[in-house]
Length: 202
Image (tube, rainbow, N blue to C red; front, side):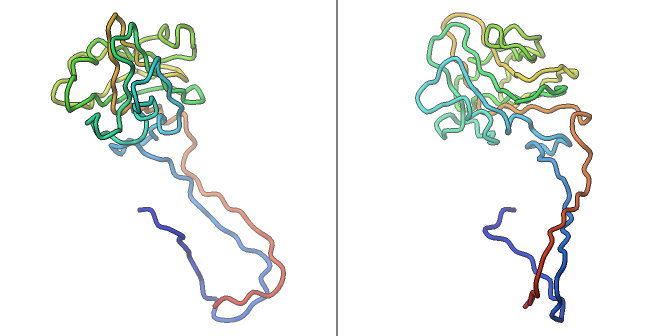
């Protein structure tokens, strides 16, 4: 849990002249919402979309919340009746993508997402819509979050592309997971700071 102004202290019992302080920490990876062993890469990405309706920016779909009620303000939304709308997240680096999870709007209009294609690759040609396809979203129904297995596709850009005229693209969360081989193993790192003078630890 988060804490404001946390602190830690050791009582050495006596007054010493401190020469060096060593701090050892553990490298940890931020997990996704379901406790995936790899981090949800989308949380660190930058999102954009073909157009935006009102306050429903592309970034709303990578805010770490699966709240599927659009009126609560956590979903992306393109302009109404657009031709071939798209949404894209830039992961900043190319990864070996294993899984993409998409949370659809849950308060209404779930069918709007039917036929949307998940594209993964390193090209921005046609806004990334020409990259290889991981899967197609078909009738998520009463389960707003669906998992798509991408079989270790390489890519920096994850695009959700909804082909056709008079379309609206709304999503309430997109999560992206990569092969663990793309990340360093958790390890311990130690850093030292030289100190001069006498320190009194109360």
